[in-house]
Image (cartoon, rainbow, N blue to C red):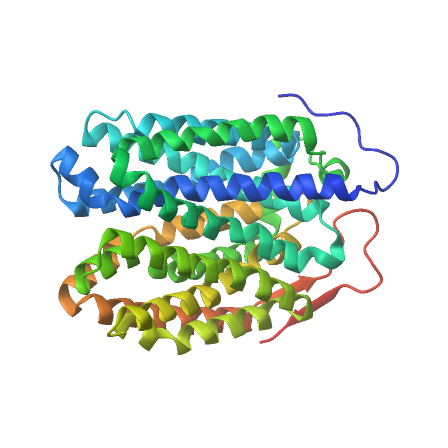
Length: 418
C-alpha cells in the first residue's frame, strides 16, 4: 500500500449518503464479524462430539480467538493510520471471511483451534478501523446515537447467529454454519464502491509507522487507562453473553430451540440499549454508561436466579439493555479520547488488549460454575465487575463534542472527576 493523495486544502462536507455509507460499512463489518464469533457458542456440544474432545476444549478455542485479537488491532490499526481507513477495512473483511469459511472444513480439533486463533486476528482488526471511519465521518451532533448504532452491530451479529442456530444448525449441521461466514467478503465491494475516505485521517496522518507509535507512547497514561476500562468492559459483556446459552441448557434445562429464542430476545434488548444509552450520552458519556450499569446490576437476580423461563428471559433482556447500553457509548468515547494521528490504532488496540486481559473470562466462569454452580458464579462475577467498572468511569475523563477535523470548536466538553 502507498499513501493516498495529499490532504484537501479545506474542510470537506460529507453528503448524507456518504455518511450513511460509512456508518453502514462499519456497522455491517462489526455485525458480520460478531456473527462469525458467536455461531460457535450455540454448537459447542456438536463440535466437541465431532472432534472427540471435551466441551472445555471448545471453550478454549473461544479464549484463543479473544487472545489473538490485539495482534489484529496492531496490524490493521497501523495500516489505517498510515494508509487510510478504507483499504485496511476491505482487507480485514476479506481476511476474516476466508478464515471463517475454512473453519467449516477443519478435519481435526488441532486445525480448528489454529483457524479460530487466526480468525481472532481478523476480528481484532475490524473494530478499530471501522469505528474510527464511522466516527470521523459521522455528524458531530449525532455522534452519540450513531455510536450506539455502530456498536449494536455486535448484538445483531449475535442475534443472527441465534437465528441460524435455530434454522440452519438442526437441518444442516455445524459445518454449514461456518460456510455462511464467507458471505461478508462481499462487503469489501460495497466499501470500495460507496465509502469515502476520512478527511480527519488525511488531515492528521502520521508520516511513518514510527510516528504513529510515538504518538501512542506520548499518550501513555491515557492509553493505560483505556486498556483498564476496556478490560472491565470485556469482563462485563463476555461474562454475561458467551456462556449464557450453556447456562440455560445445563441448569434449567431448556431445549436448543428455546435457548435460541431467548438469545434473540436478549439481543433485541442489547440493540435497544446501545442506541438509547448512546443517544443519552450526548448529555455525558460516563454518566450514561453508569446509568446503564446500574440497570444491569439491578436485574442480576432475575438474570441468574430466575426460576421460570419467563423470568429468565426478562432478566436476560434487561441485562443486555444495560450491558450493551454501556457499550453503545464506547465507539464515540474512545475515539474522542484518542490522539488524531493514532485514532485507527489506539482505540482499537486498547479495545483488543482489554480482550487479551479478559480472554480467560469464559474458562474462569466455567470453572467457577463447577464450584459454586452456574447461577452464583455468573452473579458474583458480574457484581464485582460492575462495581469496578463504575469506579473506573468515575476516575476517568471524557471529551464529548470534540472536533476531529480543522480547528477545534469553541466549546470542547472535557470533564474529570477525581
